[in-house]
Length: 114
Image (cartoon, rainbow, N blue to C red; front, side, top):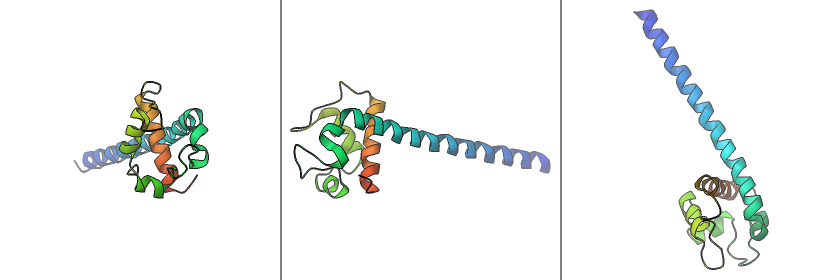
């Protein structure tokens, strides 16, 4: 009985470790995919996290916070629907691409990586 419990515990531990590795890899792939989407669709106006159309509305964390765009959901909404001078990308990009680019933008802003 003690052996079976030990075996069960070890199996559960291995399962959780495997899930963590898979989810960790997905997060990396998502950021890489987000960078590709950003480069192909956003960098023309937002090179280096800046904004060539409306200079005060950068993708830096202070501007994202000021304009309430400092969450993945807010960025997803902005990318999907557009607003003012920013066009909507909801018809051009699929949900995974939009989610990936939103995660990428927020990650870049929070880590000051622009």
